[in-house]
Image 1 (cartoon, one colour):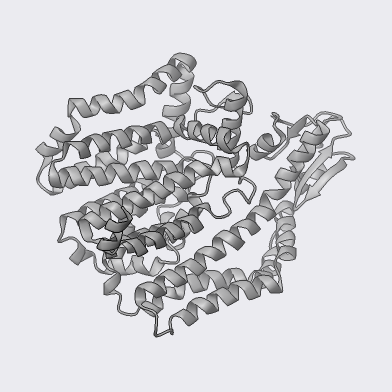
Image 2 (cartoon, rainbow, N blue to C red):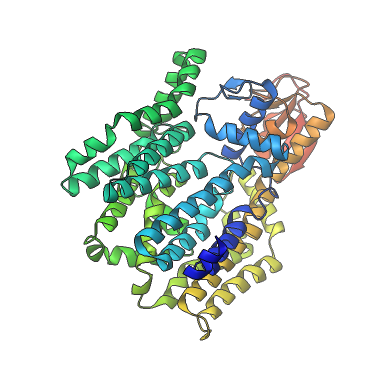
Length: 520
């Protein structure tokens, strides 16, 4: 295998991509506390699955959780049984799935467009801001994007070659996607392939592809056992909770306050694709040329459908846009040679790093306009955690990226690798740990204190599922009674009479309520 890679000239780029995957997806995987709400909820549901021995229905805080299907929980459970009950174990399935996603992207692009384009497309994927964050998150989206990418690549290969194996692979990957996050795993491939085949004047072929009995049976064999057993176990509560509330209602209305305007995903794209945001504009400026080739049209339909569908959806979350990133990375890689002023591409990551470098100056300005006591406390804590070293570190990284543009010995591709790696290291080794220390470390420490002291805790005006995980206990969400231990934030303390402070950090407090009820 190694000799064949050496002969083809692929060994060095493959090893470099593997190293970048390790840095972006696996480095520091277990170093930060789990982020609420999503990481905490997924991981706690897995812990409760482990504790109860019920591997069919997921529960959160003792109540059925119908948000997502079961596959990610099973993989987290396997990881926990292998590595123990810790952050690394909960995040490992996402990182592993994202590594497979990267490998699938490289293989498909290499076969269709050559290894140079494949290297760049995979580089864009591995080191882009949103992907490097989602790949390390203990949630379902890394796995779903892996399943979507494999499905979509297999669909195109079947279109081009008529390969039965590709059709079976597409249906199998879609089945695993449906076990990961539900109907979206067939909605995107189904709609995109339908639109593409219509555009190609091959609608009859599309029906012949999707109505293949053996492929459908394969899909059903993957999907139906769990869905059937879950329905038999939970009945209409499962149908209403999963299918209607967490799927149909997500499109038709704003779920859990996650709303936004029609232009919600424009800034998401600009930030999420960093440090490669400049390549997005290069792609947009070359749309006319891209439309000449079937593969490009397929990729553009894929991205456009995701962008338009979720822009029209009532519920909007930043990570929904990642479902359309894979085709963008390939298109961006195809156009890398068309960039006329490559040095201008670094403007976006430079602005991002310099903005965060200026936090010690910007936080006091923001704090002067904030009335919410919790947010104000977090900002004050952020000011203490940042300072001169913080500014020097991030400004120095920005200066290094700028300086790389003027190193004549570096090729454009080598320069791209170096500057994007610097950006990725700033995110993964500094900014994300800083956010975790500020927002999640207090929740973990309060939970560990509660576990040590045997406190039975009431969550009041807050919702931190990771607290349940770290304390390994349930917590009611309600107004506290006299003598109860309360997890809340500083802005709610004034509504309690004579609270006894047990723990306080960065605005998160654990107190004993010494009165019958909180003041209105």
